[in-house]
Image (cartoon, rainbow, N blue to C red):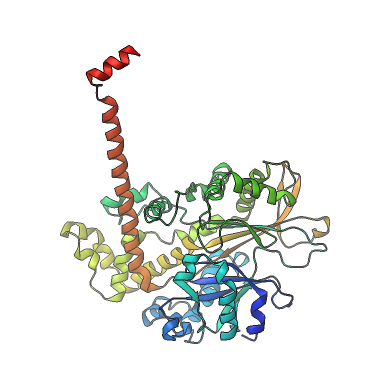
Length: 466
């Protein structure tokens, strides 16, 4: 951590976005060390760790049981309290699984408290209000994660050219088939987790409209279905889709759920693409769908991602039993089941300790893969770029060639302590979706009954007169 950001550096970092745990800032200054970089800073919940003065370094250290869980990853379990296990996890767990060409683990740099306090002051007005109310920059955390800005290309082209990047949060790309899914939750084998979770978010007021995106389309391998998926993301971006032009956001939200794409937003977006996709109006967005589809298929990254997601082979309804095996706690799930129902999970509770560890570890890795994002970045290919290391794709309809690169981002380590929360959330998601189905069925039956009911005599007379 040789580099250190101080108070005087804060003015050169601008708000790019945020998630539940981190803020992302992009560099807008002139220092060669930081041009083309972003930094991830930890957040602290208000009235949480920060108010108690607890260092995030200590809070991020692996627990004794997590050290057992990750015993096969020497670099991870050897991390001391003063090291950051998240970056080590990306480097030594996710990078080998997803491919070194598609993962940037970044590097840690020191940041002073004065830098963090001024950053907090500078960006508060740009953050969504609900994010500001929930958390702030953690000024007790003296490090940040410096990474390449994957919404841009590195400098080096003989002449500057426009750069367009698309950020996608793919979510889970398959339907679980596990035998450990209870009979009452069998709907999970037919309806995607994403669709069911959308219903819960809608009922809780987190979104104003159900998404038109279906992850199964994105992972299908079919060009038409992939285009359909991207169009669905653009129509209802929420926090799953963003587009940048030369590093500036032109579609989607910063740190929160974006507005749905209405006619006005769609037209503005079409106009923004004028400098990048050389075709008539109303056709640029459609050509962007084609460009992204071609890059996804050519890179093969979705196949890699799906393979890692499928490490979750028995679903959370099975994994929770392995979790109780390794924690040596009484399985509260089985406690709530009948003797006959509990037999379904007997094989899991009779599994060896190492097998239980493997099941839980694979689930947590898969959870990272289900929650990460993809960043695709494009720039027009010039004749001078013939020796470029980047992949290229050709847009037949516009006769344009583009370089592109693809990176996985937000590959966060999922903590063992959250596994019970994942199980409870899964129960809630499925329960609310089943309730919705019952309500829809009751409403449809009511409408059908009304339509079939004969008109009263007075009503018939009126109709006859008409």
